[in-house]
Length: 513
Image (tube, rainbow, N blue to C red; front, side, top):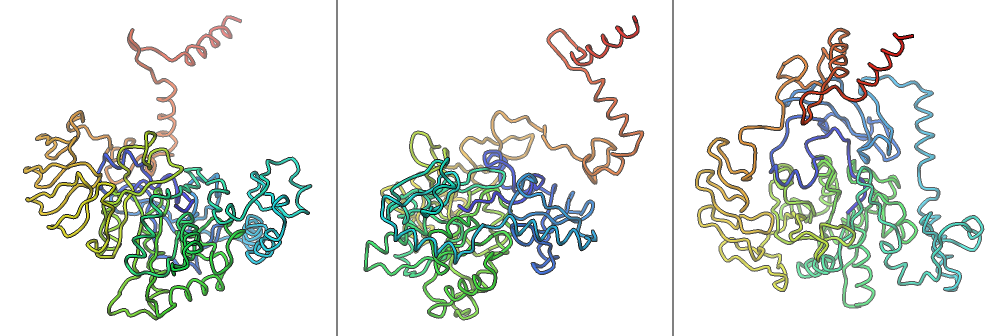
């Protein structure tokens, strides 16, 4: 999974936690921040250190509220990327020059070609002199040892280490700016076996470094294997291990190649090789990312491939998009010809999304693809079976519903059909006549956690955060006064907080003097 945990905290439509989204279902919120892809281009948008920024606007019930603004595509926390600019703001030349200088200072210390030159020097060293700095995440030459003398160094870096750089590098796991989770060997084996069985000879790995190195290592071991791989990833550290023909520094949320036109040309030639035949894209974006910018970038990649491919037979680049099942509705809105497979993808360094005692029983991560599901064989040894009615492989507990005429389970458990809702629902849900739908048994009937309208002025057209009366002097002071005089309830009844009491005692002491 590629590392940036994209966009900003206020983007409510797709930044909800995985567990809460799973329980809430697939309802699309009409509240929050919306990205405006049709109203911007990479040429006109200002750049931050992660490439072209995205254009956002605050929305309420589908209507724009307030001014549009540009923000980073790669970080959802302003601490990780401080860029912010109003869309209608006029930026001075001095500020533009300062911004460009800052962006340059935050780029990798060396070019891809310089990293490759160092790599050739590194592999020429004897094993005893091959060192890797764990703190700086850098392969060290003899001239670098003094500078890193106080750091934690790994010695005797073998060829096998360099063939599996994802095990040598520390995964970036800051959920507000990075989410670099790596496939297990089990998942990599399934992907490579499936790709080979389907007849693909080239794989474009977008944010899947573990699969990229798995393909390369298996190709070296098996001379009969003809599968090639090109990695696109925002983690520039892989520039130390892969040449320009094997790795491109890339941001999948704004379709930006950090290497410029040269890197984009390498990717395009790779896609168009053999007239576009035999290539498949496998992508594993961070789950916190917005679906719409991802789909926009994936269409751009498909356009790069389509220029020489037979568009009559293959209107879209064959694709595996790895994402949680509760994003199905949003993905199908962007790619209506996609379908979701039952195969559960797991990760080495994720406590929940993997098999074993420390993981959850069912991983929510699935594969969305535009390849016919009946041609993709899921391993019977892991409990998958073929449904002769649906003409596809499903999980063992995914029972076929004769009413829905489909194997309806999404999370791997056996779902049940509700005749009142006229659809299959999760086994833990029951139909509530008051709510008029199936919900959890211990839900608060008719008590929605979402407050409709503005808490301040009562208008249903916006929320308190965007209320025009919020900073009117009288109203604002009244709100602040209410907060200061707020009481809390205890077992003995209403009670003024201790801080308020302290202030009152101090006031009494002053009056005494």
